[in-house]
Image (tube, rainbow, N blue to C red; front, top):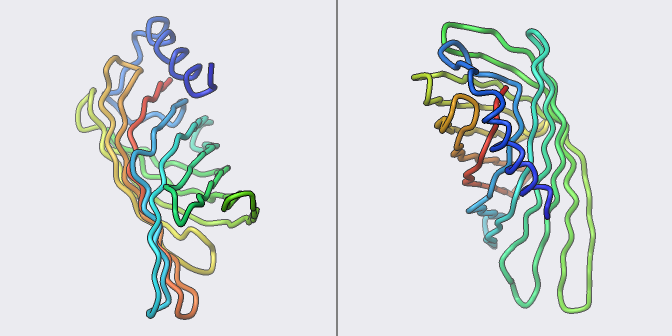
Length: 209
């Protein structure tokens, strides 16, 4: 059994143990979740040449709220479509720390996130591996529209010295603790004449405490 399936099963079971959690106030930053990246589009170009690549995969994420502070961690495993007989895998690990500012039924937040990419390209019997680490910042807002429905949005800088990121999402609570999530995110980077963009659309399952 995969770890993603285990998290999903534990979340469903936990929903029967914690049935009285209320979300009429502000969204919780203590949760565990799993996501399916249904659509990931990566494009890069220099004004003359461009390439587009589709990726999909799975992600696990967790967050722990400690007063006005919170810490988060996530793991993404993405694989591209076949391209000229080869493929690309991108395993992404992130760790973040941030602060929240609570408003009625809402949470404003800001965070600093470290991200490590482990890229692996395969073409026939040839394999090439690359890795890199970046540090970025993000600010966002989460709003409980009702006690069953949350909306969220964020903007950020994926790397301290370059790029922009933005995203939006929603969460619908099946029970008081277990929710279905939908998120879209976009990252844009530019260095010299080279521009890169990575867009993702994901659906998931989250258990909030």
